[in-house]
Image (cartoon, rainbow, N blue to C red; front, top):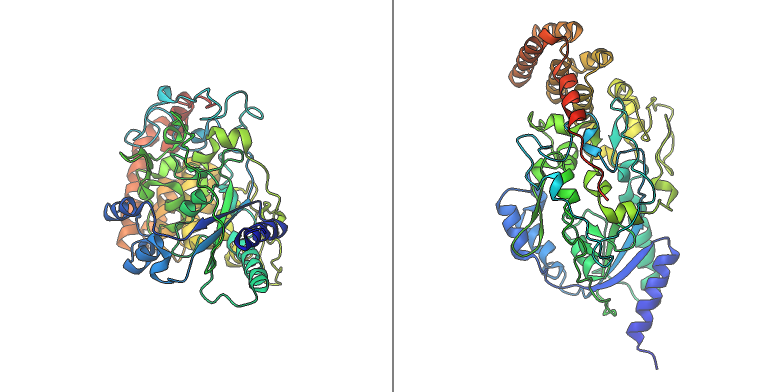
Length: 480
């Protein structure tokens, strides 16, 4: 007679797939294998301003959910693909707007090996070999903003959480009782979701810290349903199939990826990661890192774009809610309101149009989307940096409006961008703003921008234009 635990486990997996999840596995709920590493990472301050990762209660729960809910026994781990491909340059992402990745791509020198050190093993058990699906896409035009793939459609938290709660309701019906200790998390709770996914057999931790599925890559969301049920666990994924490939470490334009430590764990300095800088970071972006951001205005996919497993195996999203939006469109399932303003969409939005969005446009652009996480001031800060990296004279009017934004954060980064452009009109806008500015940090940014514009005016080009020439000369080779 079949084991009841095995039967229930298989039925749960079948129901998860029926609900639209594309990966599902079971992991035991127990103490983390990486507690020492996690505590050391926090102690070194590599989490930046993400204090929610460092709270004692949160650390305890992340390292063992049973510290808060001792009844928990099993985790149902699910995955949902959000789509690879796109207009970004997989082989040369760093050449878009900012400094080129590759040898010395990060300001101050890359923390990883140079381009010549990238080795993609021919052993298919370690890394996919042979031709990619197609040639690397051409670099996106620097006058448009790049939004990380996961944030172009509906907020994934809402899409995944709804499905997880439906699964929980179904499970309670199957076992004939409520499960009061059950918890559903999608990138929001104190749970080490990637570790649970590895235990559930999904894949391994790449050098970019992402969980990589051996036949699907890393473009998928992870959700977890913690249950006080004994389920049949899947075998954990034990292999590390990165081999000697360091494509992601080399390609990171800000040097955020630090390789593996002595135990083999991948290490990231979040304070240098473009995703952190443009989303979780609430303050100024360090000036020395701004040029490397290029035109990535919300999140970053560079370390995934260059991964051979994504270039070989990534698949498009099957969930329509994750599709990019056109101009003026709300995310799927989000009602359009009469007060909504116009916005340029998320597929390849004009930087000038993004900077010019008013409050009603931002509300329509961000409602029901992960983009809301950055806040309007944080998002305009990011767009201002991208406009400065583009360095075109046509960006001056929209950046001038940023000089008079209510937020000092927007004003200071708009000043930096105008200093990068360095034209007569840019200097005039900066001089006008300096005469009325009262915030000392913004005043210092304006003065620095005027000094940069003055120093670069002799050759008729701003800093961004000259940096673009350097970047073109130092483009990275295609990986794969």
